[in-house]
Image 1 (cartoon, helix red, strand yellow):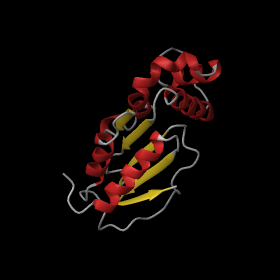
Image 2 (cartoon, helix red, strand yellow):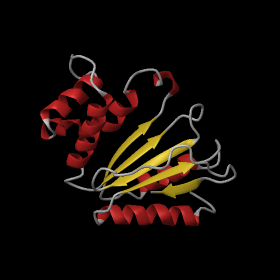
Image 3 (cartoon, rainbow, N blue to C red):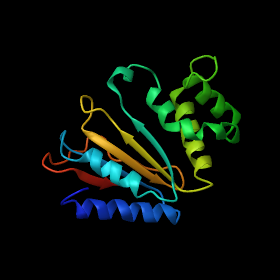
Image 4 (cartoon, rainbow, N blue to C red):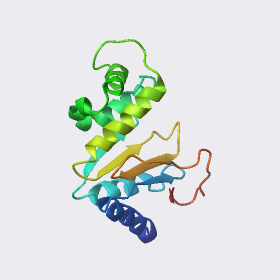
Length: 169
């Protein structure tokens, strides 16, 4: 249970409601370790009824494994790989070590990821919930999307350390 987080919970619930109506939003929850970022992210997941949830947790031992987090995130959507353009599907399959191949351009992998999210969201709205380990970053993030997000939080933005702050773009 979240105590004293009514404003942040309401913002999360508004974003989820908007996604159910077809809008696409990005929410970044940032702050110092131990101030409730994970609890707010879990709140979003719990309130995502009627939505597909794609979730990944950053794990320190896997930090050096290329695309490990992306594989964890996209695993439930991989059955739709054949529904995206062939070159993008091939790039993503190779990046995620699902099939052998030469190293792919990160742009192609990013485009493939967005295409796969869009195809996955055709059936129902999608909540993408990503938690990064504290050593590298002090943020937990959540993307609420019907379509792939068209913008993201500004890099290098700073949040007050005393409370988790939710920033939308």
